[in-house]
Image (cartoon, rainbow, N blue to C red):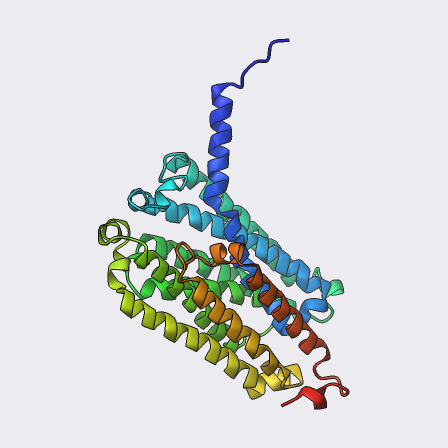
Length: 337
């Protein structure tokens, strides 16, 4: 039997599908770990119902974020073609057409909203009450929808306008992570702590500034002019100061959170202070890594640095142990401060 070659239309469809998946940036879904973070700090990681709702919210945000990535690349395709790296993106390179990308963005946003609605339905109806003990369900229904809507609206405005304004652009990126964390807290119906906002904002501001620094120092003045106007507002010396300040703020706010009387009362001990060295080490290591070429993106850093994963895993385990056993009468007097 003579082998028949694949039809050109089929090959073209497969190529476009691959380009679409690439443009959705599934590797960047790791950023939606911030949606799950409230489970750890609220101590609800032993409740199955909380995991059901958090998982639904996380999947929804993964789809919403992919929709935003497509919209962002559509808006930036002209500038991306002038960028030494971004010109290889699916839309900028022409491997994915704008109409297909736009249609996919709408579909992904609709499905992502569907997941948020499903979690909201579970919360409003109390359908997961048998799994989640005494979880106050109405908050899970309304809060998630509000924060998901704010996340989409903010990122659309960012793609269309705000990304062209220096300083505002990194603040908006950081606020996107804050909204992920807020949505995660609402999904499992835990009170939203001011510390959740402050610590997430300062940490993600540091990460966003690190990315801008990498982009600024790795492009020529002509490339900066052709790709994004916001980069013109970042001189190397200035952005180095911003990076230092944002790193210090991230460590300081987390330390204040650990020492806050509200935290000690909620956890039942002051043991969270023992996690501060891990946070300092992780921040400093990321600071050092982001000075290497092509390491401004947190996903790129994490993919190449196994030690960072060890640090993150150690931090998660330590927090889990503190929240579970830190207030035990046999342990609290030994380590408490």
